[in-house]
Amino acid sequence: MKLKTLVVVVAVLALISAAAHFLSRPPQLPPADSRIGQPLIASAIVDQASTLRLNENGKTVTLVKKDGTWRISEYHDFPADFTKLSRLVADLTSAKLERLVTQNAERIEGLEFKDTGLAFGDSANKETWAIVLGKNAEGGGRFVRFGTENKAFLTRVNTYLDVEPKNWADTTLLSLKTDDIAQVEMSFADGTPPLVASRTKKDDPFSSPSAPTGKRLKNDRILSLIGSAGSLRFSDTNESSDANAIAAKANARGVKFTTFDGKNVTVEVGRKPEQKIVKAPDARKDGSTGPAALGNLADLAKDKETPPQTKAPGAAENPTDGGGPAKVAEATETIPAGPVFVFVTSSDSSAAVNALMGKRAFQVYESVLTGLPATSGELFEDAPAGTAPTAAN
Image (cartoon, rainbow, N blue to C red; front, side, top):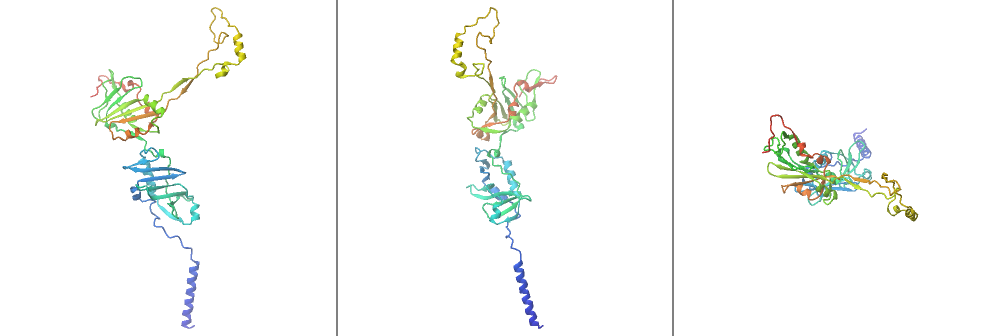
């Protein structure tokens, strides 16, 4: 074969091979997204955000940053639990986008992107970042999409969206440090005069000039009281005009804390007391009440015709004999005590608790009330032999 013919054959074969490769090549993969392998959200976006909105099942929680504090728009503008917020942010910033799943609209629809998602925004409430969460992937992880983008990604985010506004509230009402307290003044349920316990330095034991002879103050009991009544978290809130809250205030007893720098914090704890109500007694033995208790016309006529029965001299009284109607025992109904409320006042006008108390009435756990001493006697113990109780300085 001539050299020229060989060259032509080789060229033709090369063209055929190139055409075959082009026709049989696999379909082109979607172009890579620059966000693959990156955190779900950059820390800088979170740092610059002023709003956070969470949605799920038609419910919404909105957190707004005001004067450096995150607050809950849907729950009386209360401060948000910063620990809970930090945990959510950590989950988002630690999760990475593993891969681009699809850009096909039909496939995206099958990944169940509905109304579950969250979004950060700026001070003008303009969204700066938003995701919608889809269903969980069979191999682990969860499908996400950014806003309305026609892309679905897989990530390993393990966050729970709590859309109950109350659950986002910082429940802290008061957090006094034991070392800061110089004096504690207590009132008692039995109406005895208040008792004052004080100390000169934080390392000194508390003492009281009211200590009975041969007794001394239980220092551990005072420290325990500071811990229970000086560190308060609310369990629920009510309108300030709530009847149970008003009754609790009227039946409250309190503790007044004075710090070494001269500030006062008064804590009053109370509840609406248990009530016993006397029910109206039944007028007839058959239990009927109202007009039916009078009987019918025939009964009235019979009663009128029946002569009164006389009692033999010396006979005992018997409410069930024919001498008169039977005496019906009074029935009572017990209405249980109301929830426990706490009322806090600080002499520091800038204290956050003062503003909170102006918004709502705060319920606390029953242990706060039961932890208060009922009598002054609970606070004293026998002094060691040969020592005298030391009065407060």
